[in-house]
Image (cartoon, rainbow, N blue to C red; front, side, top):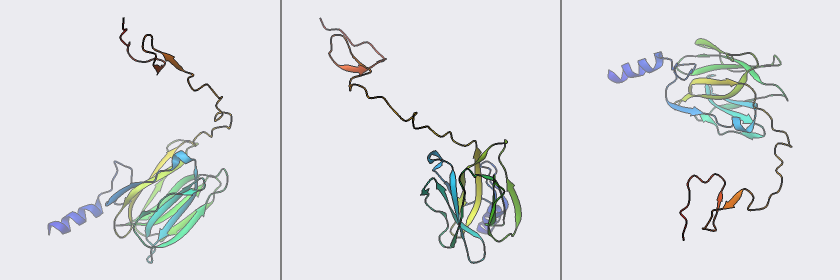
Length: 194
């Protein structure tokens, strides 16, 4: 009986602290890779009944590891140059059943079967875009999904990456009396020997 009540409670409470859509129970995940650049692709794994089993993101030319439950058929949505995700809609019951991604160019990609409670996620400020995804999963499906919104990362120019060659000891000085090089701003005085 206690097990039944625990499971019923898990299915009924949304996880609002992490802004996760859906019931949100099971193992937590956060898709890392936003430091590599903007999202260039989304791969969603859809199960035989149409529920969402897993997800991957592509940052630049690199796909992240897959997050979620095993199985499902992979479906991809590749973004065009300069295009970003500006809204995500979906539906959930005990699992995430449907995800629809909308881009800055008005294109949409829909995965899964629309069933259950509908949800919608948008950036909090104009000009922001989807940076990455987090969520929760259990052995059968994604149970919750959240979205991190923000402004596009600034692209570094090739000039910003150019460093002028320096002597190997540039930026170092000798501490008086010791003959040892330490970085400038060494935090304390070395004792002097007579």
